[in-house]
Length: 399
Image (cartoon, rainbow, N blue to C red; front, side):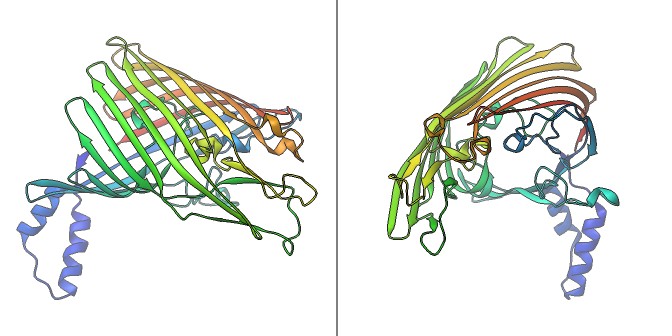
């Protein structure tokens, strides 16, 4: 993170103030300089897929179930480039911080159609926008259910499968001591369900509502050896189908951590499980539960929450002061086995397995290059399979 010292922006601010008839003082801008910071990174990714193409980052759920012959495909992009700005000040003896950041994955895992033909234009997407004061956080950032420090280090932005990975609107209170971090939060709710055997809308339609916030809590213990964290989420799933309505309480539990085994070895891990945990596990988004709609089905109007679990383990070795290697394995399992009679079962994700192996070289401070091999296996409810085999080269500079 570097001090903000761009004269161009200050010139623009000066002109705006002058146009408004306001006086400006050098001392005011010197004070502004001391409180503003630019952050971010510039990253190029070179991707070579030797099986199914999986997008600019591996889109696990979209991996096709196919028996067609694999086709090689290459792609270069800079969409993970990030821009952020922070403001820090003190009020009543307490620090206030505001931060906003975005990247260029606004169009999802694939670039907009036709954008590669001329300018490779992509959408800018909000990642973080929040205010922190006296332990309170207001805005959008990582869910309180997410332990970012336990994330494996991969060149692929999607990281290992089975991870808790979600950013959303949140109000959080956090307590810190020498060894403990305790936090509770209310977060933006969103109902993500599988709907089966739909009937004519004139007969019945499914409507979801979010009458309550999602509630999360987390406790983390840290020391010179690393940290261990436990987290939980409670969700209300509210569904109505004509005159029939259902409301169920969903939950998720997780444990994660980062352990410094030696001065050169680090172990990162995470596992989560829940009834209706859904989108709080990245690739389980859309699989909180199943709604049965067919009038001919005895369970018509039934809402069934899915038992889902996922996790990863990652080992990092510092080979030299400038070179490190990472090996990460991830798993996601969605509890759909009792629903094998569903129609089009190839369209229902049951299990994902991922393996990432990379070597990263720090050329000089803040500039790194790396190469990675990723292998992903996908299994559908019907037993169909899909696979991604990806080589990736990345060059990254943080500022």
